[in-house]
Image (cartoon, rainbow, N blue to C red; front, side, top):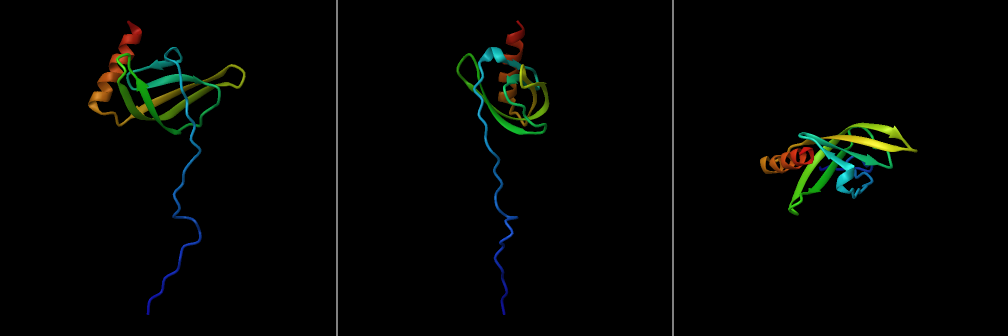
Length: 105
């Protein structure tokens, strides 16, 4: 005797959030050693995970994942979003360091 029942609760369904895409000019992004800050017209919730592609001056992409750790501002002036980047490869970290330090110079 075999008993099976199909799950109709929806608990095993894949959850996918609404995706928002930003295209930001380089002057609106401040790159730090372990993260970045940018201005946004909409607030972003803390701990929101994001995937980011930064394009270096040489045209090479730095693909990284990050988490929103701060979002300050209001709807009139905009929001300043701070992110920490995680799980960077050594090559991505080197490119990010180059971008971060070249903006200072």
